[in-house]
Image (tube, rainbow, N blue to C red; front, side, top):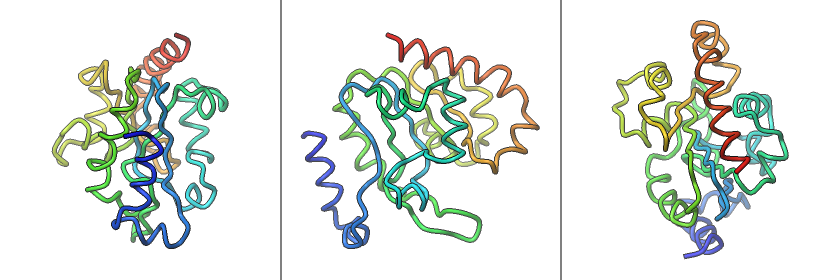
Length: 193
């Protein structure tokens, strides 16, 4: 299987036909040269409309947290971006709906097989952390992030860089003081190799 064939299979999948009929393409970035993989929830409505992920304030914050320039983030060929769902799931009562639970298990393994140089997967937010670390929903995101070293060197869980987490950041200064410097150092070492 190739990246192109997987992409076409995603587009042709009956589970995604509503999006395909509306001319909406799956939104992710995966390449054989990738060394760092970013996994978050799902594209926002804006990202899907623009066909570009993390091109907003949350993306600016994420790039700052990673210590990456915009060019390194989008054009280095070293950063893969694979949300838990490649389509905007819709709006719910309290924000975006969660990613479809069957999506990532179906498509991520196929893409990951084609990325042999991955050294670090950054798990951004609750959905990615719980899915990839196989943790019960009862484990709080703060606990996961605070204990991020348990999951190294393969996984590095962080909170979502959304403005909604501003209060969380103020209540948890250890994140900026301890976690982010370690994240930046690891990302820089991998990018500069």
